[in-house]
Length: 140
Ligand code: HEC
Ligand code: HEC
Ligand code: HEC
Image (cartoon, rainbow, N blue to C red; front, side):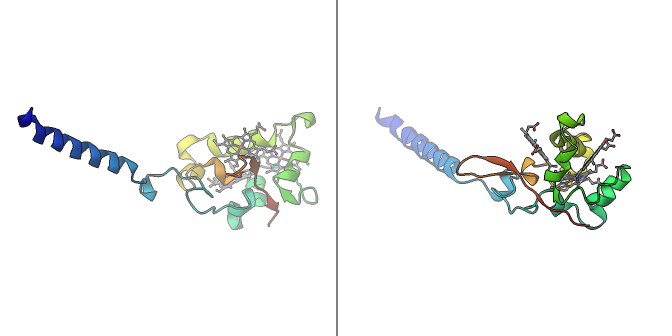
């Protein structure tokens, strides 16, 4: 028994160090990107935070030959739902928003530049757990 003791002691140290290392919080670069939770939220108003200037929704929708919506939409994406709902016979805003950003998978700039997080558009109240959709007044 006596001869084994140093081994047991060494093993105990190794296990203790291993356990301690496991308890160390992960470095920031190892964490998943969850805007507003693990990183600053760069799109607090959702769509309109990212879609400014040349990227504006006005330009993006014009490029898709979307009908004119001047005067119909003040708050985005909330007011888009006046037309984009199943009752109106159109795809829901959820389908439109999700497919516009995820359909081309990793070729999309939304994934490569913005890491594709759901929390770019959604917001989670970490206390209550409620998930909502961010929105903001239309820009140009
Ligand atoms: C975190 C930034 C970000 C947010 C938030 C965001 N988008 Fe985008 N969106 C992008 C990027 C990046 C692209 C791809 C741009 C490109 O490749 O031209 C894009 C593309 C689009 C396109 C064009 C797709 C196409 O194929 O031409 C539309 C339309 C669009 N977004 C609408 C929306 C709407 C509506 C919302 C809110 C529900 C929204 N976006 C929220 C970044 C964002
Ligand atoms: C006045 C009604 C109306 C409003 C308001 C409206 N849309 Fe649309 N949108 C349509 C119709 C109708 C279509 C489908 C056109 C078709 O069937 O070809 C469409 C299609 C789209 C498409 C798909 C285009 C494609 O080529 O696949 C996108 C993206 C879109 N809308 C985004 C938006 C966004 C973002 C808003 C709010 C800023 C919005 N729409 C507000 C009527 C509307
Ligand atoms: C580009 C913006 C955007 C991104 C990114 C996004 N969502 Fe959404 N999501 C929306 C919008 C807009 C709605 C519709 C809200 C409404 O109807 O009021 C929605 C609705 C939903 C709904 C409600 C169900 C439904 O069909 O109406 C669920 C669930 C959801 N999203 C899950 C996700 C998940 C999971 C991700 C990430 C993988 C994600 N969303 C990423 C914009 C986005």
